[in-house]
Length: 524
Image (cartoon, rainbow, N blue to C red; front, side):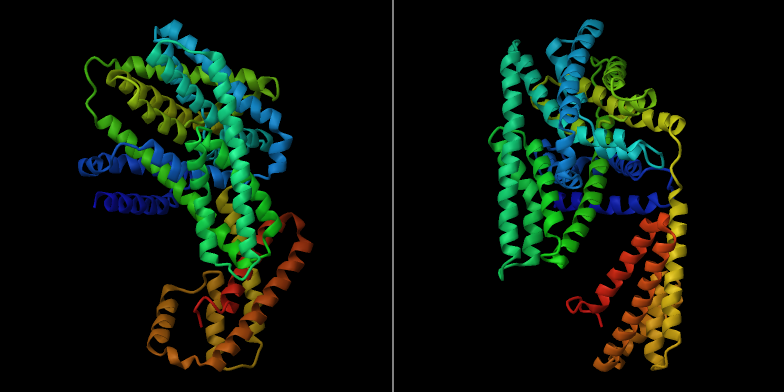
């Protein structure tokens, strides 16, 4: 019963939180999800039914699909051309940062060197979703933005391998750098190989089914959604990097999507919509869980022997050491402002949180609480500091509301063309009124009163729309949609700088036409 309660609380909370975010467009959605999670987590009965974050479940069910979907957004050719830079930022930079943080905190704060490595390893992975959150409504050079996103895809594996080395060092008092380097190569290269082999195997199976009479769209979608979970599980079972495996799988699936989109267009559209939906929901879940976790941490009485301010200071020191390392590294490639963006854009979030809770099995309670305080400080600073800084140093991007206003203007112009086309026809008045109502719905011109009137009429007297009338209505709608699309085509030629906006409205009309023509949607 607790599991059902947890699922309902999470889904209901992110639903409400996402609606509320529309009232505060200046606040990023992920912040509101975190705040909402924290607020819900302060309720004792909610806090009691939420178990401690299970790292394996979190990585398998949430993080693996997110990384897979994120990898699929990036053409593999771009990764290949930037492979040297990606290796540099996701491996070399992580290693250098970890070494500097480890020995700085050991010398300056007197931390056990193995424990210092554990802190450093957990603090190095970055979060692409978190970066996208803090640059909301800001203009960022696409080159720097791409580097940060690509780095976040791969540096999780480096952090996890360093963390395993830290645990071994803490438990035994010894560490073998050569052995850990070999392990790093094995996990990274092994994960990449497994990702390539398994993803290509899945792609071949899916393509064979899609091009045969055995294809079932629902099963194809389930197979696709299960792909990152299965690949991550198999890679981890073979002691390689599941994270690298699912990222590589996502990249290969990008190539598949580009070269098979028309084999089953219905399936492709549904899959893309599913990816968008799942990505948005899982991202919201991640930050809601982060809020719940922070609430659970603050609610636990901290033993008197734990020096809270010392660990907060440790978190501040580690955060700015990481910023310094990233700045020096990026200064050889970028301008000062780009280096600042790259440095502070290394936001820490989901993986850092998951890795922190792994440590509960390896550390004594007082050090584990200190680690939680330290990493919580780092996570909060990595969100708050760049959010404030970027508002100062980065120009504001076009207001999203302005873009929506332009979209609505184009939409209304196209709909007006469709309405005029129907108004000029001499057809059955009942059918004409229904078509005009549907066309006005495209631009949200119908009031709730108009909807309720149509709703009551259709619900109480739905038989009046016989097969012949339904077909005539369909023909009229197609005429209107054709007129709207022709208008947009001409507009795109006249105003090429607004092509993206016009294409968005054009696609809306195509979706509407699909709803009218698709015999499987059970709509009349």
